[in-house]
Image (cartoon, rainbow, N blue to C red; front, side, top):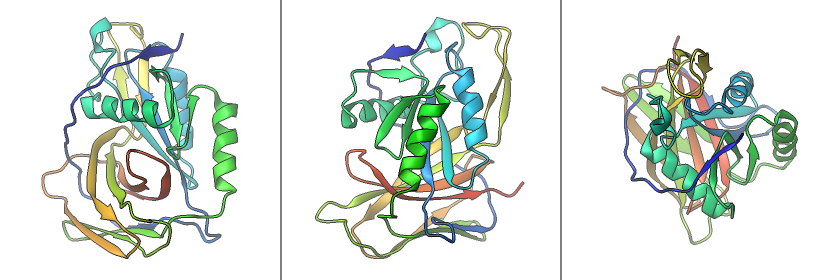
Length: 247
């Protein structure tokens, strides 16, 4: 049974670890990766198949797969150590922007434009293919590291209009294995990939090239990071890039 709830929580932030290398938003053919956000909980018996699917998506270059753990199922017997109120708040904002009736798990939001039950692989793949086939509408994004500083550059582009777009930094961990001892998934060992540890708004993009320097000192997250360019009020994602951390 798909889990559903309607509630709002406050926003908080945490941090990221060191990384190496650089990344840009598009492949040689000019296609930007499609962002897939899974909203899930280790306390939800319907979620493990969707989490396994996200693990497969995380291996692809044409997808940025992000796993957001929500906290509203913690009360049923298992507290999800990766859950954050700000991730629940992000999901609730999607309910509003996508004109849904309620938040549920497992929910995949694709490119900030459509939501699909996260375990329905064929439906998710169909939406991903549709967005990959579109012409890129956003600017190029580059992510590089210099010493202990993460350097993000969002290139110039058209379409910003009068409303600045949100530039978001997301950091995530390497895969986790968790033995669940209580709740609906009691006795199972769950594998979670690209578990989001931080979601931070770096600033605004108004169509001009913009540069952001982010200190990595003392921050968490050992798997990688992504930068998302998203319309205000959590609208569509128009550009994105990802950078794996050094393993």
